[in-house]
Image (cartoon, rainbow, N blue to C red; front, side, top):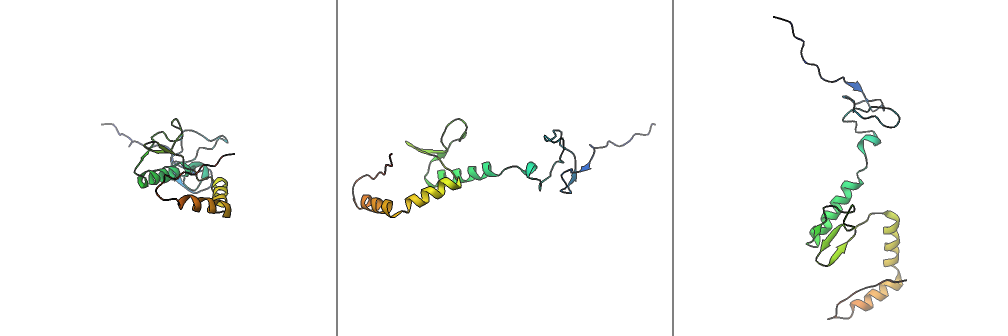
Length: 131
């Protein structure tokens, strides 16, 4: 009977970014040649952006609120995030755009126009901004 060595797993190392995580290095190195370990969370490069997940959550909430549907390929192929019947909705959290729209919407001139429009009962309402 021969002595068999137990199977050993992959080499484990401390993450080179200095986060202190000990584990198996990733196969693909970053541009600087560092192989971060799997589970390296503190490193911004490894954790990545959470913007895509957050956008998905916001789009899903909008679709649920209006009884519509979120497009599966939102932003990639369809060009719209949520749709309901003839309505197409594009959602954004770009801070500069949202801040500008909020400033415009709450301005006295626009509030007056919207109030005048909403005062007409029994009619369909629409607000068109053109240049």
